Image 1 (spheres, helix red, strand yellow):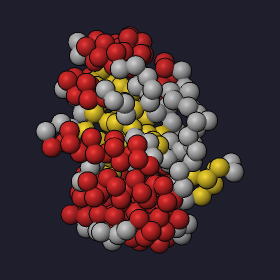
Image 2 (cartoon, rainbow, N blue to C red):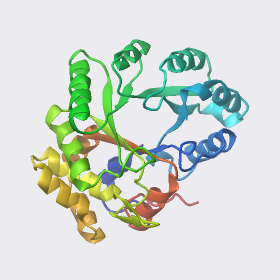
Image 3 (tube, one colour):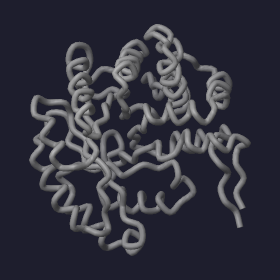
Image 4 (cartoon, helix red, strand yellow):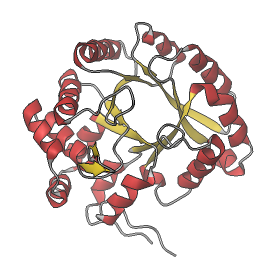
Amino acid sequence: MSRSTGFPHHARLFEHLVDDAAVFPPGLAPMDVAVRDHVDFQDGPYAAQLGPLLVPATAAAEVAALAARDPRAARSPLRVGLVVRPGGSLEPLTDAVHLLRDEPAVHVGSVEVGWSPDWRQVLELGLPVVVEVGRGAAQAQGLDEIAEAGTRGAGVRAKFRTGQTPTWPWPDEAALAEFLHATVVRGLAFKLTGGLHHVVRGDDGGEPMHGLLNVLVATHDALEGAGTAHVARTLEVTDVEHLVGRLTALDTEDIERLRASFTGFGCCGVLDPLTELEALGLLPERTTA
């Protein structure tokens, strides 16, 4: 029998929040290892908090073959999100979706692309779409286009990179606050990717990293009408007890509204944030015999 943290309605706060980006940098797990581990996770104690396995669209055939060989995927299909990174061709995405539609061991839940002038063509695939946007004027243009697609009934979310790469400087609190505020005022759902390995703002190996709890609280604040300066200050908080207190004070309506906005984030090491959340008592305790 399992016991909750004492805040049972907060289970929804972390439900399917962490997408498994193990095959992407800096994790770069081999595909066979990533598929095996993800199927393990789907059967494991963090299944309720786990999102899909994110895979390059170009790897669709390999993913299909690996899933088909795992008897557990026959009982519960491998949930994946197909990704074309910014600047990549969209053609492999169309091919991948068509291939995997006939694969019973794999379920494609979404497609993810970088913003480009022709990104809207992926709407024809009939799947939820995630569009990664940049900063400044390019970000505003991308978000406006996503909002416009939403008015036509398309299921589109925005995506923003919170971790640094060789070509993407780390977005500081002001940059992330600007994105959060911009999505909220447009009524957009969003996900994040990269850099959210820990629950509180800090440094990891000398590199700055945003905190998951900071982002959750900051998103709530933005939804309540806070401006970008206030949201940025929330992203700077390093007091974990303060952040936990803010989150555990949320009621069911607050949480539903928050998660309708912040739908998830990609992480190459899904156990990093999940084990920290568990250590803080924010996840339901594991079931024991």
